[in-house]
Image 1 (cartoon, helix red, strand yellow):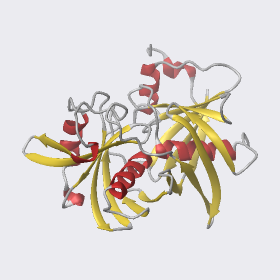
Image 2 (tube, rainbow, N blue to C red; image 1 turned 60 degrees about the vertical axis):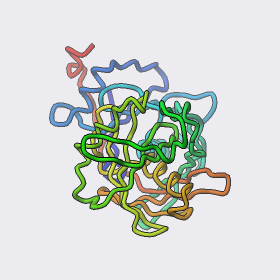
Image 3 (cartoon, rainbow, N blue to C red; image 1 turned 180 degrees about the vertical axis):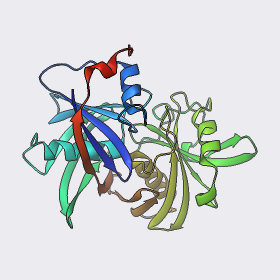
Length: 282
């Protein structure tokens, strides 16, 4: 089984193709492949499938093997993979995802390439995010352990909770991230973005991702959610650079509220998975 390893600002993914034969891979096999030191190692696995609604379908799985709705960094890697493999013939096309069809494109930037994607308009309906609480989703009071936060709850195809904090660099993300992720407020759990606003066009962000991700170096959907929420509240303007440990993303909010994500991606290496690797996986 051939695979490609990709990364986007340090957020890394395994990509497999399933175009001629339907690839059926178990949850435990996906988890095993994504496990560092014992597998290839990645923050997620993506399968390229055929689509009747777009050029291709991006089937995305979290590192615990569970299928997920969206991954912004993974989407950029997916787009680059399609382009580099010659599976698309134009620089702009549509990709189908579990959270809907996305318009995407690729452009040269210096010696490399940058990928943009239209993530669509943010979702603020509590039932669709989803959150199990009445009132304004952008002003949810969250109490965990010894702290009280104001959560900006929003969806960009997957659920997010954006929280402004002081001292972001030393903030205990790995303590408060999983506590907030698993609150009953979030029936489908939540990705949690801890942000510090530098000015109306720059924020710093660290993310705790649900379902086994932990803290990645970058999060594309989290960057989109953070800027969408903060712009809605008038805290930032429509064009924002999101500084993360893995690098910077640019997020623009269009007049129709569509979120445009713009950032790099890279193919790292290709290889083959020996079938004996899957023995013992169910």
